[in-house]
Length: 527
Image (cartoon, rainbow, N blue to C red; front, side, top):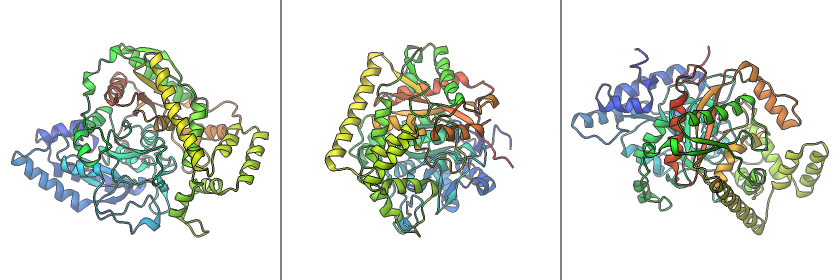
């Protein structure tokens, strides 16, 4: 089978067109992807479940429908995969915790149900970080997922299984969730595209979280694929008007076509560093390269850094730790025998520190020159209700200040890093959460944001000069192992301008399509 006819090498958009033209059947597409899963997933371990028999039966039924002239739309017969944290009827969304294995869902998550209705063929569910709380895809229940670019590296998290499956060609399209970069960071690490819509633009019904009831920072369901056009395809097909019937939080108006956006009329801001963990050289270069791509398409591009980023990010951690970790610990258990991933052990220790010990540790960190660690220790830990309300107010004020500053510069979209470094070696996310600040900002601001692949790390970029503290030393260790890994750029827009963000992402991809160092997927993991 040639690259031009192998369904596993085709984008979701191209595969959808071939299915519509009946040049390939849904069963053929499903079989090809299932065969690739058999061949590659023993190394990558992206999947928690593979629905072989169900997928083939569904594909055959959809082929019969098409032969009768009953076509559901562009997703008819298209293979897809779904993050393990999204409900599927009769199955448990464990979040990588054994104690949740008996909690079977009564019905599908809203997006899962709409995918079935649209004729998608669900191949399987994909792996996550335990409790969805760190930027890897590893947990004691399903093990560790590797990047197809390098088996020594993580595909990111928490939607890392999705990213790995898509990057390896085991799925053309997937659904993830994002509370702190959990779609966008895996896309960046894995050389694919991912999109976090405006909060509640897509239904979040049936999306599970470790922090039930916490709404200062909310997770958002969104698509992942190998191209921004594929993201636009599924965003258009899963109509918010239909979602609004399932979920009263979703505004019932359709997505504007990204093709209607005149990219040449856009005014684009960009920044390479948010003042927390300095960006790797390759990450900063990717932002500049994406800015040049939009400038080549006629857009006006200007430097711009949103105001108050460090305060907002520490507010993010303050809000998520307001219960002192009690909710998460109640799921995993707190005893010596509790199965807790290495990346969560420091968080457990931090969350359970008595206030006097926390203050002492913060002082010690400050005296040692660890200013960022000092402030993190100062803001985390249990809070009173009035303190949480104050934090929430500050986060909403930060959102308003960012929007106001962007409008003052007449910006339409913003380019920035998705993460401070390229992909992490396994277990490197421990004590490195601040590196995800560039993605976390847009969760607390509730803006739509997506990531597209731009370049790969050059040999001379795999180093970092004069690290100042433990965070920068960790970043230097990551950079030293990053040569050849993919690097993406984050594209951000105002709430409910999802189509503008997607249009800018598509323009960047198109402009850079012939660049020799642009990451191209699918990839086969090294031997």
